[in-house]
Image (cartoon, rainbow, N blue to C red; front, top):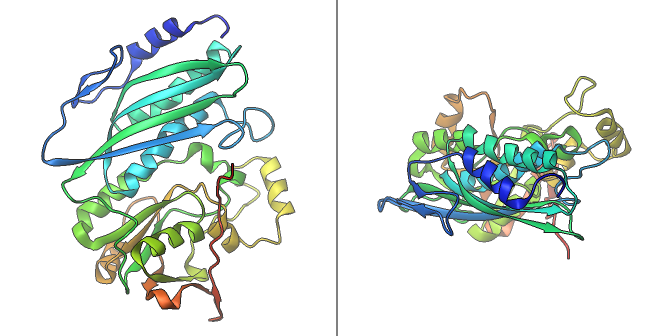
Length: 327
């Protein structure tokens, strides 16, 4: 790396690492040491962002180094939110391309740090490596905490449950949301406080609404019905917060409807929940958060499959489409 070696970088990172009261020993030792309360459950998540797959550093859709760091940490946080827990401590491994600038390294760290500070959890340690052939990548291992036996899982959805989704879906790459999204930790906390055991299943929407809903149905042994007119999808506008290049790209894909975009695009990082129906009605009625919460359908028996209902009542099979990493 130019102008700054690993040891000097680590020294700077240690000095500014966010803390948490459960972290007894943080960065600078061989391992972080945590004081974990015995009456709380632990969630453990590992995730990564890789140059060329989750972001690019060149061209009209280039991410800033800070956005790369934020996305890496927020992506892991989104999974902690999906189980209804809250993050406590993260460790991070960063691979830098040989010759990367000090500005890039410090920018990535600034994004990681900003997410930790925003949601009040520790950056407890990490590792830095340099490669001549591989681009920038950031791997985050994250620990979260929640009530004993209270984790929301993909399995557990029951026939009749209401399907709820936070925020808006689709177009995340085109509008730049995939680089600046906020993990729905606060929304999950509110839902847990208000519903208790009323949430039967949950997943964060990262591979598209269709694929992630199929994950829930497969794990729960059920089907689902989704109403097109209820899906809160993203609509590009001339004054939308996205680049002109992104709007051009959308024009190229104009044959795809906004609904299809919501079903298959992915990287929305919203929560999809299967909720006891009466509890869902009460929750939506009293919802005052700035992030919308929308009922989009319901859980049905497995033999009825997963279907989408158009505004005119026409029903069609919801194909299992969405993003999938392929070696």
